[in-house]
Length: 298
Image (cartoon, rainbow, N blue to C red; front, top):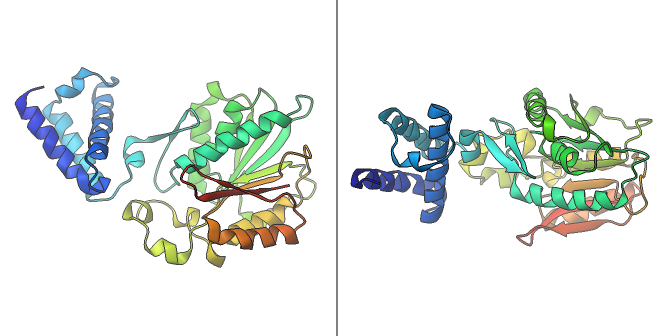
């Protein structure tokens, strides 16, 4: 690498530092990913030593992406256009919620649990409420045994359903189970006589007060409907619980409901609502950061 390019790389890293909380290592990694994006966009080639020699046009494109990242607070995943999730490259577009590592972690956990109780003679019918990009539904469809599961993903946003269907089409060769996506408002949803066995959801759970202090990367780009809920972040959870009581049990050891939540402060409210609606075996899972992340019940 020439001295001139070394100096230019240092300038790019320094520009990225504010978007990386001053973490030099993180800024260097983001620069590599942005370079990969530029090279692929311009040449249709994967990452290689070609990154050491960007053309003038490619350097301008890289400057543009860095400006988006730093000055416009655009999330890296929206610039790169994809986010890895459960061994799928999920396409990301603003303002649809970007899949997070916390969600990926517990989705794999649910998949492992489902594996234990699936009966090939009858499909497990799953409803993914607030599906967003479709990442959870598609992860289930990829990793569960072939033709063992039927999954319907719902979202109130037409843009979300369009993106989820796009991700479905992109990953069709990897999908082993039936998936369809539908636009639906959870407050208009009724499962009576629908023969759904299980609901899984990453609903909005941020409180209005918490929303005020979110980073601009989130607040200025992602749909607030996918982030914020009334009743201290539990309004949508409560509605899902009311719907889920009509789920038909598939196996007595397999919970009927899994929901991501915002933390310890929401547990008692959600437990009370679950108890009121006849649920039992209420359990909370922590994530790898030791934060209360998922509540599930039978």
